[in-house]
Length: 313
Image 1 (cartoon, helix red, strand yellow):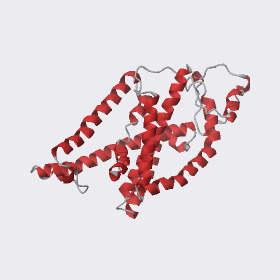
Image 2 (cartoon, rainbow, N blue to C red):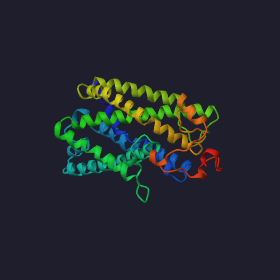
Image 3 (spheres, rainbow, N blue to C red):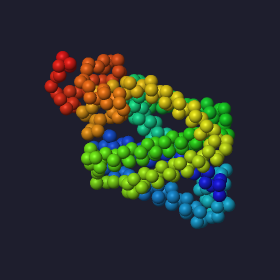
Image 4 (cartoon, helix red, strand yellow):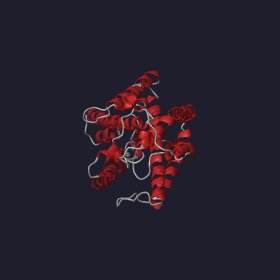
């Protein structure tokens, strides 16, 4: 029973990328109509093609027949006398992997672009093509992906498991961030700073806490998966401090850019509520060296006050 529970992180890895539906809202013309339909479609596709196919295989043949040496679909077709399915299934797997890679490259490139604009990523990541594709972020993501080739050369037998654990943890981190963000959103709704859309997440805060609880259980199970899962979590003892150090190095630039964006990022500005930031937000605007920050100036039409102030002259 325990081995079956430990491989839950593999199931998490299989669902990685489902949150990308939400990231497309920034590029959708009719968000209120398109995004709900896209989310519902994804849920039904998973229920039919993923869960449905697994249930069907379990009903048709005993689980002892299947092996980790070959695809369960290949095993099934061989048992019923259909030969030559292995190459076809390999083509399907490669196509699915290429599709997942394509979605991951673009979404990560888009995230890096947004981080670059906000000041928490290198200025290089803000470069886009004429059609708006974040080419710099995609190239940077591709370079990082090449480390997988190096890993496969060093530990070929465990390379997939290592990548699976890292990807699963990264996916869970994004889901935790989404759940916490949703709770913050609901809090701001009660304060009257936002209005909830007609299409809402079922369960509300209960669903958020359910996700957080499930993520905690998966992390515990990952720690029990020795040696790869255990060492993956141990490596976080080195990764997390590096992320904290990186934040303290860029936070001054992030705060300054956030202060300049106050007025066109919504009813709640993108500014962390800390004492030093409160002081920056409430003090009069001063001249800021745009080139030194590495961002483009904000159009005057996006600000609340289009009239020049005394300290802007």
